[in-house]
Length: 166
Image (cartoon, rainbow, N blue to C red; front, side):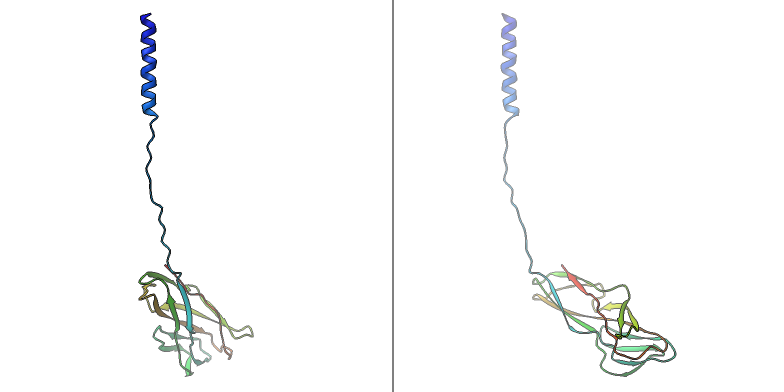
């Protein structure tokens, strides 16, 4: 009989401990999200190297982000108003953003299969970052036009991408 009481007592104790182990605990947490005004970019000013002349010697036309143009080799400036590519950025208040410009050569063509390349593109923000002021900002992009010896005359154009993101 004593053995039965001891067994029953052990079972009661185990049930008591088990119910304490199975106790539940609940806590609430908060879900959060922040939405920013989408960042956008426009290109109100095209990159324009002006009117140049080629010769029997290859050369370059270097357009700075301040729209200054210099030439090397057999390239000479004829006329026109060289202009760095201009970009306008809009977005959220005073938010920092990043700029991506081409690092590979950009090919421009005269429409008859003749090509030149624009390389060494440069941004007026050397670190390729800036911060919007009152939701707006602007920057410029220059580059180096590579002109072959005896480059065929014509108007050369081509597209390249500039990207901004938060």
